Length: 226
Image (cartoon, rainbow, N blue to C red; front, side, top):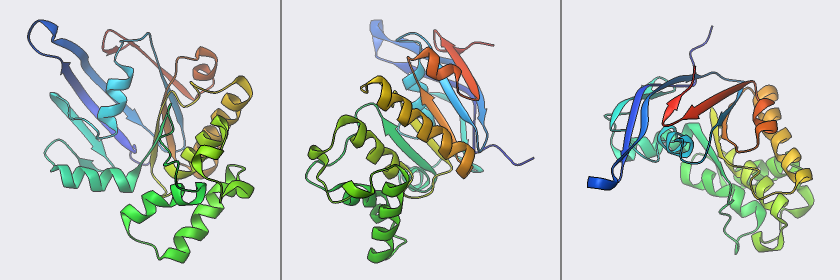
C-alpha cells in the first residue's frame, strides 16, 4: 500500500494573545490517501479552517508535525515550504480570488508560471485542456469579472489543478454557489480524486455534501472526534 499523500501528528495551534489566547487545535492527527475525498465538518469556530491552513503550509503549528509527500515540514524554511506547496498542493477557496483583469486562461496559467517548468506554449495548451475539463473551453478568453460565480469557481478548480498537485485543499468551495453550481463543483472535486488519483480535503458547512465524501472528519473544540 502506498504512503499517504499527507500526514499530521499531534498538531496544536494557539491563536491570539494574553486574555484572548485560544487553543484552536488540540492534538489533531490524520492521514490523507491518494484518490480519496475527505470532508472536515463542524460548527463555526471548531478549528476546521485553522487545520486546513496548517495542512496547506500557509501557517505553522505551535506543536506537532506535518509530512507532505515524505517531507517533514516543521523545520523547513519558508522558501522550502513555498516550493513544496507550489509543487504538491492546490487550493480552492470560497472566494475564488481570480485576477479579474486576467482571462480565465491566464488565471489558470499563473501557478505554472510560478513553478517555472513549462514553456509558454505548453502552459497555454495545458490551461486550455484544464478549462475544457471543467466545461469552460468556450470561456477561456473571457475576463474573470465577466464570468458567473459558478464559472469563476470552476476556473479556480482548473487553476488548482495546474501543477498536478497530490492534494487539493478546498475551504467552503460551494459556499457562495446556488444548488446547481454547488452540485457541479462538488462533482468535479470527486472526479478529480476518483479519476485522476489526487486527494481532496474540503471544509464544508453543507452536511449533505460532506456525507457524500469518502471520509467525513468531525471537528469539535479543536479536536477530531473519534
